[in-house]
Length: 60
Image (cartoon, rainbow, N blue to C red; front, side, top):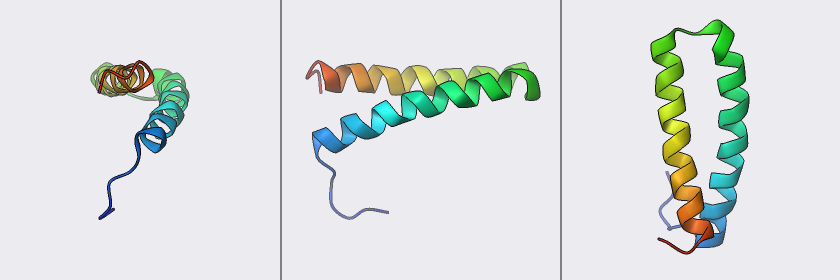
């Protein structure tokens, strides 16, 4: 765990990386996981995208 908070620029970069990671995970999970697990992954992806767009637009 980090003891120091990350900068907003770092947060935006990490959220952007997570968007790409979630896309890859969703594509792989589509054929290999249950519908419930796919829905949970999609929910986490949506939450991350909301954070990313808020950071991008200065909403946080």
